[in-house]
Image 1 (cartoon, rainbow, N blue to C red):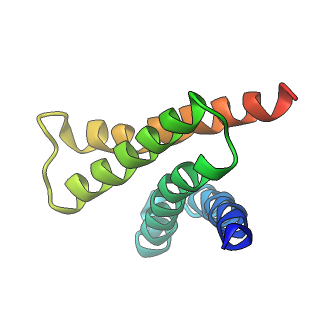
Image 2 (cartoon, rainbow, N blue to C red):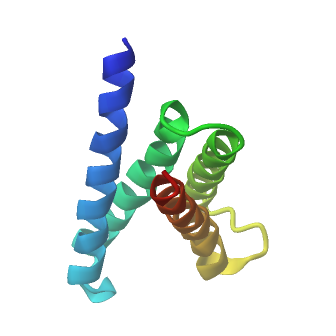
Length: 113
């Protein structure tokens, strides 16, 4: 079971990386391709932050899960057109920023060893 959990993290992370490239390659005016790549990025990014739980040590382990939950919750709010007064751009930033902060903190975690 442990091997499965360790393999899930790189799969989510690779999917997030590939879909981020799709977001950059296809501008917003390509509509469906850009939005599909963005949704895959948001979902796989949040899940990769949560799946890193088995790799990291405390306290980063708990912060990663929290950031993944914030990303996925903000994505759900965007899906249901609830922007909490932030506007569409604000709620989109609430999706992206926790993932970016997690990626930066995780890369620092990997470099410290």
